[in-house]
Image (cartoon, rainbow, N blue to C red; front, side, top):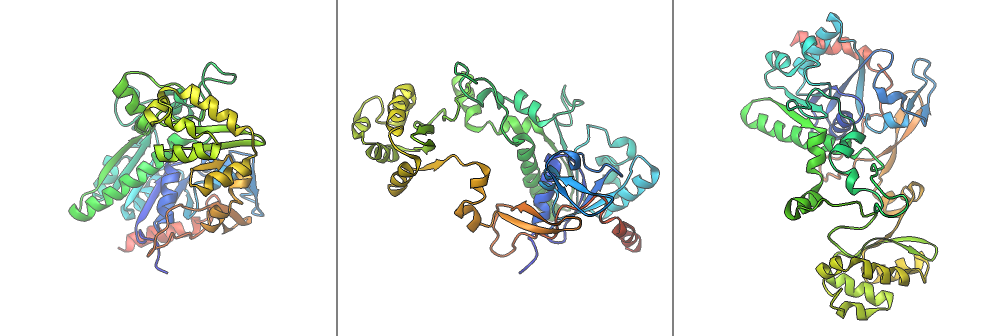
Length: 397
């Protein structure tokens, strides 16, 4: 098999936590050589974000957190203290060889080390320099730090997530994973690929300014558009969809089912399975817009029907007529799901200190250039013995 589609590209990774490392892990999966620069002794903050931890037999690095394993496979770890002149020189020499730099320091934070975009551009004009911050390189909040949970709150996501305010347990909720960080990382990947194409055409590098808050506002998607068109701020609706009905979780006799009825034809099939075909000709429910306007009445009727039978019975009948539905799986059921297993979304990589570690696969499947899973997330400073040869390679060029 050929190497990943981006084989030969080199990334100098000055980021830590999640948004930056998530983006550079995706690039590593695509074949990029990633040099992860970490602080001596402590390394990336997420190494200690546990439990759970993966135990190892390396006395210097006895364990790393599962959180750290999430976003750092395929990288080489170099420990460099770039608050020192020696460290700054080493990073700049690596920067001269790199195609891309990813960093997530506060605005202006790297300038005092001569590692900011202007300084690196002066020694490598073709560099693509991706800066990830909470609020961007300018604006009234530019100097503030930004973290995923506060960005979910400030960017509006919490205001539309969670159970309805008037119900028990209602009110704003944080999404169960750091979606602002993760989506920012994915926007960074797409921006880097676009900048690589631009450089291929023009020879010009550039700086990419990517902010968590900007990303959060952009990913409001239909909810943001709903507000801009209607002038009405949406509220949390539990599992329900603001624009489609029925599209939410329902209780059944022995658990819960999620119905995702996306059009009027599916609604007709759904009502046939439920044994209430008369709802499809009811002027309150015949079309989706009517169902949205009469949501409470319809959901009550459907909910009563669904509680008369067990989950597996409903799933079988809905699936037979292709009404989209699903059980609400816990993670143990996710990773034993036959489709997830068939798609090889879980695999293992050899680990220098722990034998093997479990990984969640990149979801992209390339037909000609498969993902390049080279190695497990590295131990802190695992590749320090390669640093001198890398720097000397630059000196020989």
